Image (cartoon, rainbow, N blue to C red; front, side):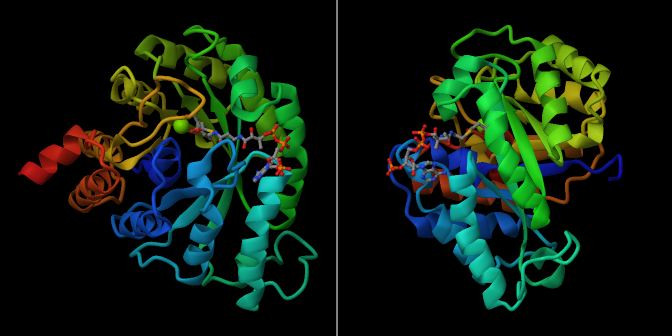
Length: 334
Ligand code: HMG
Ligand code: MG
């Protein structure tokens, strides 16, 4: 990864929409992904395979996956699509679509005998697909979000990880509430985050996305967390940061992380988003704002900010929310 290229993981279709109370038509969700695909973004988290009782808004992710695999959104550069799942049930639901689509394209004739002989390698026309799993740095949040302890969440990941490896599907792992917890307060132990990151990497995670779910992170806390992660042996290249912007600190914390050498950041177009189990937390850092920041520092994202700003304005209108991106609104006003 070139040092002057910052990889952005667009989580708008998942994190951005999951907390919306009013059901959003599946056509709108698909159109959001298709529009984002034309902005130069290269990684999009497009949905989640979680319990529809817990997060009703994500209930139609199978349809979105099916659509993306059978009619890949047009894009100038290849796009990797990520899908969030909490347990084997979520993986089974994901695979029932993904494997059917792989075999219908004759890309998955027999079960792979080795990780290199798999659907992803055999069929270059199927969009690249990755899985995301998630746990958290506090027991209270893990219970509220996934109804289990931190240790149980890791146990749930073992079969997901081994099946993902067999299918050669990369796995990213989120660690929520790394800089503050809605139930345990702002001072989350960075050593706990580091310990979890190491466990997840040892289990085979390809990337760790460290999440400031509540937006309680500050520049000094971010710096301390990053130092603790480094000291524990977590490489910068294995790390992504996922800032929610509840207190308006997301860009400041992003600069701290950039200076520290982090090169992957999650963001949601128009600053959409929030976690249903983190009361009061608002959206992710707006992708337009992050892109503007990165470009202002002379680094590249591959993203066309004007096209992205249009997508932000469009989806805000569709779901009846104010556009939370300052750079997006300013770009459109020019
Ligand atoms: P549970 O109720 O303990 O699960 O929930 P269970 O195993 O007892 O199952 C209960 C029912 O759900 C059963 O159905 C299961 O089949 C079904 P029933 O027999 O009652 O009809 N079920 C499922 N259905 C569909 N897909 C599944 C699934 N699993 C079970 N995967 C569970 C445990 C983990 C399922 C639940 O707590 C859950 O779905 N949690 C997800 C919560 C969530 O999506 N949170 C938001 C995403 S994380 C986030 O936003 C943070 C992040 O952005 C980073 C950050 O900012 O911090 C990533
Ligand atoms: Mg989030």
